[in-house]
Length: 552
Image 1 (cartoon, rainbow, N blue to C red):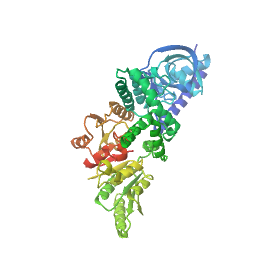
Image 2: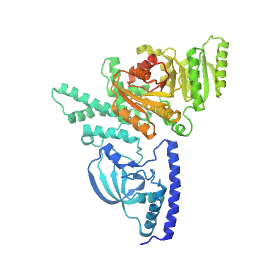
Image 3: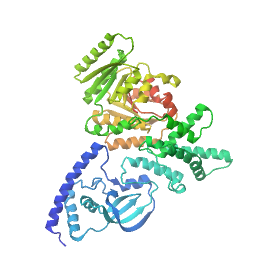
Image 4: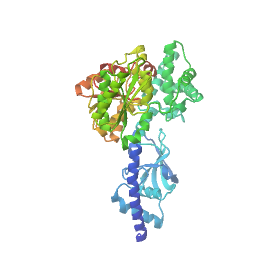
C-alpha cells in the first residue's frame, strides 16, 4: 500500500531533527571522554568467546538495553540516532509505514543484559526518538561467561576479553557459578591465574600427588580467596576504592600479606593483613592513583591539560633548568607558571628576592603569566601541598633517590607519594618534548602516563614510542594491547616495542632512537617496593639525561 504523503513528510522532518541531535551527541560524547559508538556484535562475539544460542521467541525488551548491531553499528549513534543524511528516505519510509500499519518485531541477539540488533535498526532508531521504553523483539540468547550491562563501553571490551580468556582457561564460570572474579585493570588476570597455579603446586606437595586444575581452583577459592574477601567486606575496605572490585583488592591484600610475612618472619592471617591495611588507610578524596586523569578528562578534550605549572626554585642551576623547561611547556599550553621558593630558617632575605627577580624576568620575556611564592617549611611537604593547586610540577633533580632504605629519606619520593599530579623531572637539560617514549606495564599509574602521552601526541604532535619491559616481573603482552587499542580510539599512530631485559634498557632505547622525553607510571612495583622506592623510576632518574614525566 502506498505511503501517505502526510506521514512521509512528517517522518522526513523527524529524521532531520534526529540528525541534528546526533551531531550534538557526537560533540558531547567527545567532551565527556566517553564513546558514542554502538558496539559491534562481531567484535563482542570474537573477544568474549560467545557460546551456544537459544531461541527465546518474541518478547518485549527494554529499548535502553539495545547497545549494538550486527553489521550496521557504524550507521547510528549509541542512542540509535542516524549518522548519515543518505539514510533519510529509508528512515522516513520505515517510520511512515509504522504509523500506518504498526511496527513489526525486530530481531536481536541477547548477550548478558544487553541486545544487538540483527534486523530492525531503523525501527529501534524510531522507537528511541518516540521515547518508547520497550519494543517487541524476536530474541535469540547467546551464552556468555562474561556479564555485559547497558553501560558497557568499547574500552571495557579489552578487559572483558581477558576475563573471558581467564574463565575459559580455568573453567571458573562452570566450577564457581555466580562468583564474580572480575578485575578492572588489564593484565591482572595473568596474576590471578598465577595465584591459582602456585596454590595447585603447593597442594601437590602437601598431598604428595597430582592435583587437577579444577580441584586446585575450588580449594584456592575456599581456603585462600574467600577468607580474604570476607575480611575485606567485614572492614568495609572497598568503600575507599570506588570503581574497584573485591578481586582487585584481593590481589592487593595478598601482596601486602606476603610483604608483612617477609618483614615479620611469621604467618599473617588474611584478616590481620586486611585489618593492617584498613588501619593504615588515611583516605583523602582525589589522592588515589587515576583520580587526576578522571578529573581532567573534559579539559583534555575542550581546553588544555596543563593550565597551571608549578616550578620549585632554590637558586641552583637544576632549578633554572626546570624553569626553562616549564616556560617551554607553558608556552605550548598557554599556561601560567607558578614559582615556589621554600625559605630555610636563617637564610638571608635577599636570596629569595634575587630568585624572584630572575624568575619574573624569565617569565616576562616569554610573555607568560606568572606568580611567585616564598614561604617557610619542609621543602617536600610544601611542594606536595602546593602541587594540589596546579596541574603539573616541573622539578629540577640534583640528587636522584638511591635504591633500598636510603630512598626513604628522598624528598623527591616524598613528593611523588603525596601528590596525584604528573611530575616532570628535569635532569641534565631541558627538552623540546617532541619525541617521547612511554614505558607501559598496564598499571593504574601507567594508564595515567598513557593518558598524558596521548594528549601530547594529539595536541603537540609529539611522536610516540610505547614499550613494555619484562624486568623482574613479567609484563603481559595484553598490557600493550590495551595501550594500542586506546591510541587507536584516539587515532594516534605509535610504534610498539616489547623488550626483554631489565628496566635500564629504556636508557639505551632513548639514546638509539634520539628520544627526548620518557613517560612512566608506577612501573612493575609491588606495595613494598613503592614504600621503599626501589622502583624503575629511581633507576631511570639515575641514568637518564632527558626529562622524565612521572605519573601517579
